[in-house]
Image 1 (cartoon, helix red, strand yellow):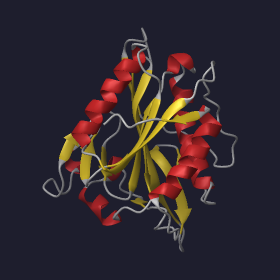
Image 2 (spheres, one colour):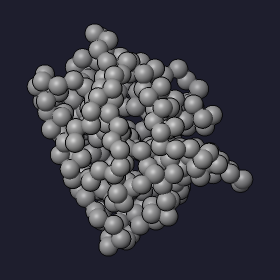
Image 3 (cartoon, helix red, strand yellow):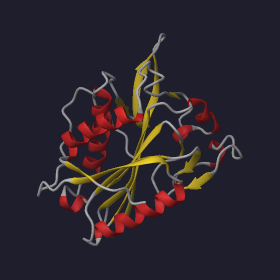
Length: 249
């Protein structure tokens, strides 16, 4: 991020991060808890983004606390700021939305846990690279709760797992965030039990040499609630305490 903190930074960084490494801590200096909200049912994309951006603005203005918002979307594709039209293989299959997050095309839908992360880096650490590393460590730590080793690969966005025979690497989680006035929005998505065939309508994040998997695809018949518990445990290790909060909508 260059210049004044009022500038907008679009972040989608890659790094080699061992799943066995100690998580980079990204706690608040004042130890104030972040709100933790879970929406029941499915939330429409446009309404969710509007609520997320409005909450991020109020956080930046000092009128609201930080919030991590877990939800599930109906089937849809989103195009990040670097999306290439040719990577939308089935444009009429699901609704397609332009997104202000970093990255290219991705899929959201039932069985995938989306976590919108609205954190104030001014109260934590004004270090974008460290923040993205902390997001990666959060997801990797949550996977570790189920004895799944998540990894980050240079040149490939997201969190990856090795599995199968012969062994292959597939993406299990995506990371894409944006910062405005040092407050983050957008976040991560973890494949718990989505219909993986729905990913065939796009080239996910522009990567053609590797596929997509899920916790269920790895032979772990887990629910969203079980994934949520692991995400919360790992989040508190990396980012600090949470407290229950109401979803924005």
